Image (cartoon, rainbow, N blue to C red; front, side):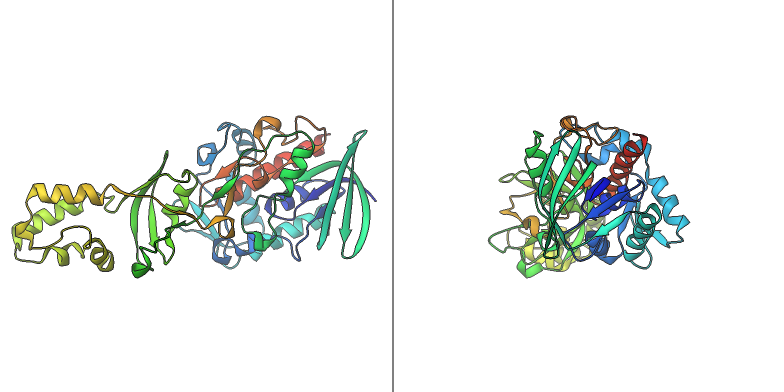
Length: 391
């Protein structure tokens, strides 16, 4: 069977591309399309971010994402959502979520695909890909039946390795390598940290706003203590910048007002217990936990400015070394991927193979937490579609 375009992967980027080309077939080994969309954002899908720009992405080439993001912006996708009357809201920091369900986004993409005449084959696996004389040949297994398909354009939209229980594999990397394209080192990103000694198990469930830092990544967001270690938006964000074996730094009082508040309170009611008073600014269970290593004894009057300064230096520069991360099992994305040096930033087409396109998470473009990776899916998928249609 011959198609103009075959797209491997019925995720966000693959469906977006299929919705804007002609004579396309989308293949996926999953039972349903858009499964990672369905589970994202707690089932509400954080489908974009109103502040999305290339500055919110990690890549060997930090400029690579600029073209696609500029040519199909968050405002373009928001307009599409509005045209489909999908109710949505801004949560925090520009993050847009569906009011009702992530399934609204999937239904919109499916409707666009049907309008474009795209076919969708689920429970279908690709076992081999060849390219000769400008034509791609794919060996597939659909159900239990083996078939051979051909196409002029082949789009790799299979994502990375994150959340293997959803069917994630390194398939795109294998195909890219087969055709002489480089794949950068990959690792889990937007993922919780683990500590092998279980040091935070007793305060599991405690959360607070922090400033978290790993490498060049610094984020002011919430952090959550878990039985296994640390999670929450601040931790997921810095995990993309963390190197195994390195320390992270936490500022537990990022607004910088707590020490001044305690100093002022000391003048008013110096007889108050210091630990009790600190627990009005930090979670009480966390204060109890910290008290094991920090001398928090005495009343407010016992705490000189020098003693307060020494304490807050520790609270604002708490250095920890995670044992590791929870890995691809829970990672929201994969850091790294198909090297951008082998891909056109305008068209998403391989510089090595005419007609081979790479979109979405399969590429070495990784966004921050907060809708950025979905925006990259929409923008890169649209970039490939426009190039295919212009041919």
